[in-house]
Image (cartoon, rainbow over all chains, first blue to last red; front, side, top):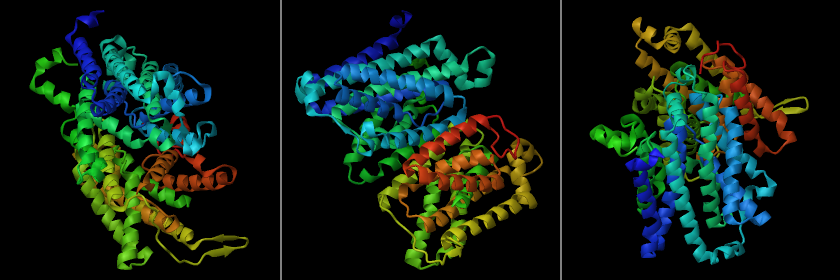
Length: 322
Length: 276
């Protein structure tokens, strides 16, 4: 693997290591919870980035993968007694497969039309699950605390979930990196620049788009399974929260769309900012306003995001950070 | 009811057709119309239908302001940018709305006698809304097709650079169409407020419906939007006896995707298909 010889590969490894070790070293539960949220954000943002940044397709409904993954996992565990890891993975595979089928349909739409249809996807999936009796309809599903037993009780289970989420985050970063370095990624970037020209030059655009849509569904779905298992409760408004979907877009744009490190940095910064906003009395109600203002400012004045401005200032950074 | 969907969609179809910008604040602008009607009726005691001109002017001003702040810089760029910028404005507006009013239900009380026709009774508010919608659609049609301004708008919509070359102040025309689009959204908000109770978050379903109507009616076509709106209203009326109301978004969305894939130029196809 020539990836192994690149410094960026090891930078990702170091980040994962810090995530895994920092809270354990201090035994700090508060830090763990904060980092846990960051791992979820990073997973969602770097998966979205493959659609948004590489292929140039805005997906307003990326949270659907997260929610559906959560639903699959919770349902498999509570109704069929599957173990956590198997249920979360099965959720990922199922959502990915659904994404592939769905992607072949709605990805025939281009640009803005696709973006609009993803808003529709979120509404439609939400309405569907709210009416779907086996998944508890609008009241959702609970997990019995007994399910935490195989993981050594609730306390121990929370640490296990955290490590699993760190692993998922690491996979999402490596996946994002590997895709960017591959021929497939080059095809996606070409689609993002000019889809018509890319097709003429022999990029199988419809197939690539469907694959990346489905690929960007997998890890968020797994993360969703773990996340909702942690809460032991899932219901449609939490699972298909348009606000979270939005935040993920803000994160990817903030860090710099189309880069591997950007979404991760963006996620980390946004998580800190959010924590500060939620606890400060003046801004607690205005979290959406701030997210909106931030996004507007980025779109209007710095469409390259943080990584874009870093690159402009220190072009040599391109060699290390991708 | 359907006529109001048509009116709501006219705003979006105008902006979309003229400047290729999809205004994601549309749903929130509809809600803004609802709330201005509520405030004007509640605190200033203005009769509901008298708020329409006020809201129309207010919406126009708001639209022009929105255009100058958030849209001007991204017109003509990749659709991604304008989507994201209007989306973020929408977030801010919704955030402020929920911070001020929360998400409780509001309604605007209207007393208007209904009209009985044999076995059926049409509520007065519905009839009034339909009448106003038809009136506004007519006015918009006249404006677009029988005035110099309308001619300029259509020219910019057809080819912006060429329009600029022949001396049309495209920026002003774009700001004007954006203002008009938002004003229409606000007015349709007032009319919807006379029919149903609403919350700060009611915009999304109407935004979705507006997209469906726009696609069905063809881009940038006010008359098509009106017809498609009526069709959608009828469709909803006909399906509700057979299935729970909560399924309607699923069906509408399916309709939207099928319509987009099958008829990229709009089902009513009055305008030639544009590549998307």
